[in-house]
Length: 398
Image (cartoon, rainbow, N blue to C red):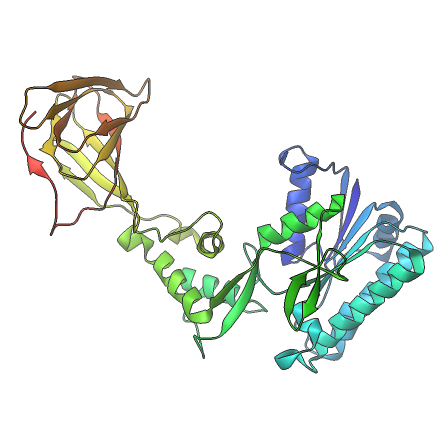
């Protein structure tokens, strides 16, 4: 399948083209579609290129558009005018391949969107595509997108999330006039997955009740089912917690299918080079070192322990706390003794065969470096972060 993407240099276009190329090169095998060629058209492309692409394309994603022109009249030129040129070129070649249009929720022209030239230009573009479908029989997919966010989105342009991520990541101020304002948000990877699915006719259709998309298999419009609602205040609060990671080591709750996970990935994409690395506090003594790596609100912490040759560490037990010791380098011995008994369990461990050994509640335990020359490096997981007020740690040699 040969695919034409207009607006290929924009936020959505860059992400879509990158994934289509991954599919083409066999790097994204989870998509059941074959991509032979990706034609990238943008503002610096030539009319001759557009003509050639329209002649060959098997599917067209029209993402070209104008969001913030200096002259409001350019909304119509950029959003309606180019769409006309694109469809006329396809028509001239007799190419009735499917065509997708990237529109906006502002095309509803409802409430605060009423009378805005951007929304009006998007609505005009939609009608142009629907007319084209009636005249040619081509399959036309019109998507109305809400607020978009994700990597490569341009800050200080048309995305509050991109601006907040960029400014907070770079230590610059942000302005929030009303933290209670709620946004409907669509993540770029969810968008890309949806419109790639449309290549095989698996898009989601809907009708609109106001600005709300309501699923309807026979609906005139298309939509991405996975969106999120968050207030500006909630977004900024999450971003500030992400920004505090170098000090707290705390990773906020990021459920796999949730908004926070997507926002965290977006935030990280704006980090400058000097903030993508930070020092960790190494607690060092003659025995080696112990360094906490990551904290979580409800799932404990991860640390790394380095023991010098011949050193024994640990010699304590817990009532409820439990740990996993994973030796990744060196040769060691882990010992556990059930409190109040002489029952001892021993596990010889090595970085040559990585295993996880669980430190059981009620068992005092240690870890011994058996090497005379090599450090013993152990990754340690604990099911709770250390609380000095309730340490649940009691010294007792194995």
